[in-house]
Image (cartoon, rainbow, N blue to C red; front, side):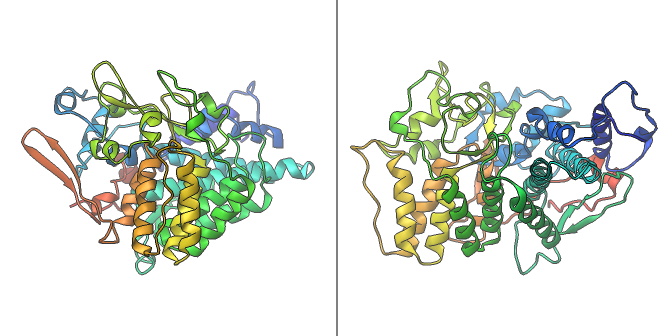
Length: 462
């Protein structure tokens, strides 16, 4: 049976239920266009609403300490299914889903895209082997998107990577086929990371160095994701290797001294004029983080020193006195969750510091600071103390990577080190809620419907 483009979306919806084949009985409309050429499949990949928005970072942003919700607002929160899970996740509850939630869930969104890339990869195998360059771009892009979604899901639904236990820790169901009737169980965490790495290595070999636009991945995007993966694994030599590859392609940083002040968002829409951007990916503003509820974390705000321009670029006060985040690289109320060079300088600096190359680490972190502080307030950092240099880098990362979805990933990996372990706290009424370092609640529960129909083993959340 031929698959039409609208039918692809219908097939993707079937994966939300993880198994079952009733949707296969639906007949496609013969008047609808069937994707058969490389250009057709590239057009599917270029659908930015499907492939570049609603990235799998919602639970990570909800659970992080970049913001807080005041008690009165929390108590007034709506109780529909799509909002209630956010309210539960805000307090890191053992149970966050009621069952019946739909497309707003990270799990559903991620596996929709994974199935989409599988369909595209299978379709591309059948295309005429002409236009090799165009076909390579499409294949490489599909592999990158599959890897990106598996990586993002692993940071939410799997425990933090530990080389000593990864062969036994639960990973994700590795769906590498468009056949949704296949009964695919959870892999090990090691297998999940190996699949992500394999897809990215294949992708970077055939992707162009510089893509047509920032909504398409190029080699730098693949290298950037590999650097994130190896940062999670604690392989700092690999972090240095891949961040250096990215910064060889693009080493630009925005000078915040030259940004034009605006009453609203600090950057232009869709990354226009932002030389740092490597790959544009974003997530819709969540109900719990919209202007009615959002308050920037006070300790984060207080961490910005006088002259640190990020304080005024990232945050602006509204008439109610709330400190709102207005510094997304998307230039609007979507949260930027893609890749930019500032992250790469921070990751490489950390890699250098952890491997004892303090001169190189300080060079990277000072270069970033030179583009973030007023000229009169800037003082370059200098030290021969490895711990102090690493402290500076971790602190700069905290102040730089605000509301990008990476804070959750950083909390998970840094909690393995007593020096950086952080206890998160929320207070509602007279009750204090805590998320302690290395808690099993750093792995969110799989949605109820997926567990019931896919037969997946649920994450422990005592």
